[in-house]
Image 1 (cartoon, rainbow, N blue to C red):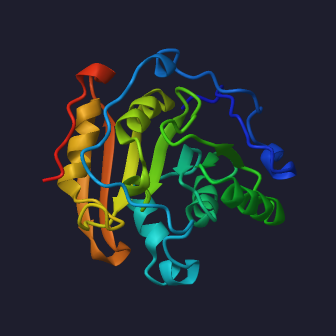
Image 2: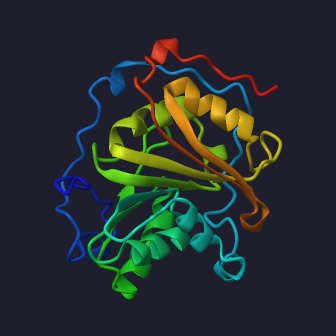
Length: 242
């Protein structure tokens, strides 16, 4: 696991410079990312209606986070990212699972959500968490840094999925994986059919590692890793929603 990564934080107070976190410094993006254009998805994109998929007690009653982390083979000492972290349901549980030797980077495009999460992290003294503001088309993650990147019940809200996935590619370390949990719902209804998810990831160059239907977590579990090559932006073939 690469320990030399430096993470960039959002200025929401002391919570972003917690003891034990890696040094905070600007993230250097892929130089090609700002010079290319990406295709738009051929499907509706669900609007963000809340920073919470469900309340935490209800999710814990069905043991959601533990199930997902077990399926993802998440272990102590790993470095992970929680994309679309919102109020931090997964962030705090990921932090507990990876332990004091692990790291969690919580990312969101809502400054208000990150403000609240920052206060929670500070209040609960979660010293292995950093917080990062991202863009709609770029998660702004440091390169060569993550064993797992979690996208739980949020991918259907990504407005520029091809650009987002393309820009996420360098953030994985050797053997790193992207974990997606989604509802197998019709397009535009706060979920995404798994076949369309597979197609969009594969269009960028990712390879499906595992897919499991899990009604107990209100959806399906899928994980991907990088393939041999990342598809050039102008060669990405848009998936049809059907």
